[in-house]
Image: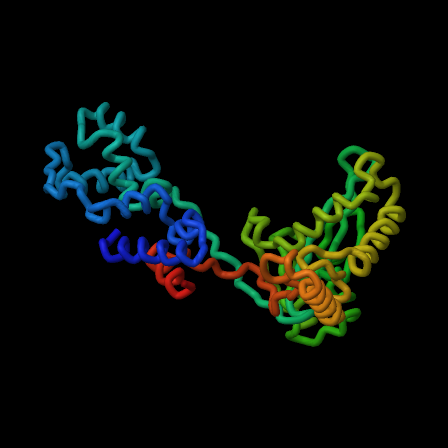
Length: 356
């Protein structure tokens, strides 16, 4: 780290501590350990005392030898083999180019260690990110298994939920998975929610019912834009996965006795959806029901809670060490947002300086 940055870090921590901050907390913001900071604070501790002598490594491979290693590793004969197999095969032919570790080091530096040429798998790009600023803008749907009393036999619960409000806008239960059932469910959900053409994005995984011809034709007819997860990546459809965990962990879910008949499973599913939408205090919604969030009734409820807490703080301010509980909800909900680059150490120091 440059000397100027070290001096600035020491100065910022001292200033923060003088204003009542804890040293280890200030160091955490700068990604510096307390031990490192104490070393910098010593006399002459800011100077880099490492020797700057230029060292010449006698056994270092030349540029020509490195090129030969890459040429051999990428040749038709060895392109699909790792260095641990390339080196012995070369030795069998009476050839020695470099050690096995040198092969690994050179390929790692060229980013060819994991997969090279034909052995390299096809990369899957992340799904398109979507932002919902209100109800009926982004939906997510999936299918989960409901166990029956027959071993290996399941009922299939189809669920469509609104990402913004977490409300279940449509569900159905069947004895098998089918794109036809899924298409009818989406059609009914659009009718119930009075969805217009081009209004909703529907996200799902890559299962056969989700990408069947009947489903895709129905989405096109309804003007619903489809969105799909990457293969075998459950994190791309997190809202449906979280909902299904709530389904399986509900106290009335018959995990031991299981479902006897399809009609009883449908009756249970209807009761669960009614409870989830109208009674369940959702933790991600600041403990209001999904239906109230869906209709906008959550705003006065949360505003009232804020007033209650502020009055309680005015009445007994000695019991509050900071701000009252935050009862506000974000204006939007993201589905598969782009990953932002983590701030560098210098950027954190600048941010910390501005805050100070």
